[in-house]
Image 1 (cartoon, rainbow, N blue to C red):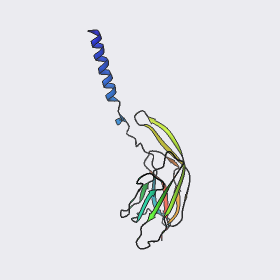
Image 2 (image 1 turned 180 degrees about the vertical axis):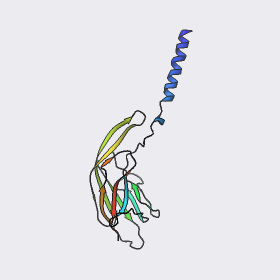
Image 3 (image 1 turned 90 degrees about the horizontal axis):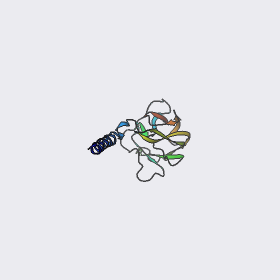
Image 4 (image 1 turned 90 degrees about the vertical axis):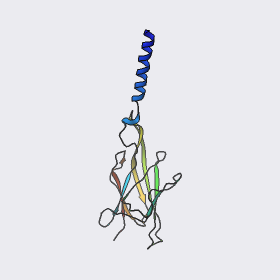
Length: 163
C-alpha cells in the first residue's frame, strides 16, 4: 500500500510540474526587430508615405514589408541572424513621377545571441555598426540607438528629401 501511495504522490507531482512549465510566463516581446520612422529632411517632422513598397533584398520568399496604397510612417526592418548585414529596397510608386529609381539601405551589424530567461528562452540582439544608402529620395539616415533588442521603440530615422 505504501508503494502505491508513493507512486500516486510522485505521479501527481510530476503532472503538476509539467503543467506548470509553459511559455505563458514569458510576457516579453521575443523579437528584436528594428523600427524605422520616416521624416522630412527639411522640417524634421514625421512623414506618412502612401506610394512606397519596402522589401528585403535577397530574402527568401515574400519579403514585402509595406504595400502601396496605405499610409506608412514607420516600418519594422527585420535583420538576418545568420548574417552580419541586411539590405532593403525602397521602391517608389508615385504616379506623378513614375521614373524615380529605387533607393537601397544597407545595415551592417553584430548578431548577439543571449538567453533571456527560462520562460522566454534564447533570443538575438543586434548592434548596428554602420549604414549606407543611395540618395534618390533618401537624404540621410540616423541611428538613434545602435543596440537593437526586444523593446519596441523607434531606433532608426530615415530622412527623405522634401520641399
